[in-house]
Length: 231
Image (cartoon, rainbow, N blue to C red):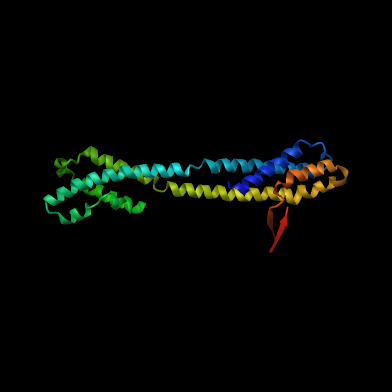
């Protein structure tokens, strides 16, 4: 929620509180009461959506992915180094080339490329497993690499999923704010005019609660016609 949206929500709540505290004034106009109820529902939905939006922990998810990547890279480098020495001593030039990796190789790569590199190292370690014990590659080490691969892969799409979730909540918030705007502009602002002469205190109090947002210019769409209206 940005500053402008927060300002609007505060205004909605101010108007709602003012009207609720003076329900006896508009008891004779049921349409006014229904509009107040509708505004309350809008405010509740907005606050719930804001809570959901705030609950999406993008930074935490990204940090988890970063931690998993560090574990994976460390495991890959150790395994690749041992495989490289093994290949060097047996003149397996193709294997040497594939195991010629360092941290920069991984950190300069995109997530899916990191996965591909890691899988290749894990596959070669499994392929030559019976010959690698003297190079420090054990079953436990290969299992640790496999676990690191799974851990990284499970998080690789998390930041994007979180971003998409936040976008969804943001879109919903925009629609809900627009709906609350409509309740005010198209209903309450019109109906309160009934009290301009009969109850100027109520009318002026409503306007004071409402004018928190008077400087805002809202663009309303009516069919194919766009209208700019100062509320």
